Image (tube, rainbow, N blue to C red; front, side, top):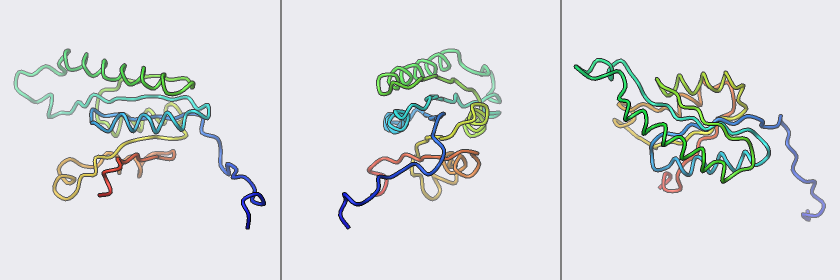
Length: 159
């Protein structure tokens, strides 16, 4: 069959209007953001989220304040840098969200609050004991999110 006789591909589902991209402080965050920006070029609003991880263990450290103001300031600067980068990569509306708490819980709540159509996350490709100890935020988000989830992997991940 010649390519001229084929019908063009059509979107069989609903349009993606709201995208949440969850970024951590890893080296792969730039690639995750780029993937989300490419998808948002169809006109979807892009919400860039970074979660400042805060746990009971963090609070339990003797003499440690609940959150270090310097660490929070650095995390907010980190997010702002990625929001600026997203605005340079897409014409869509871009909004930053600085969240504090458990990354999985905060990202799921943000997706629900925004009625997200798509969540874009990265993966660290942990295996074995590393994965058992560190957990898999991406896997949990895939299982629990009420929207579609795009997991961005580095090209090296499969090797």
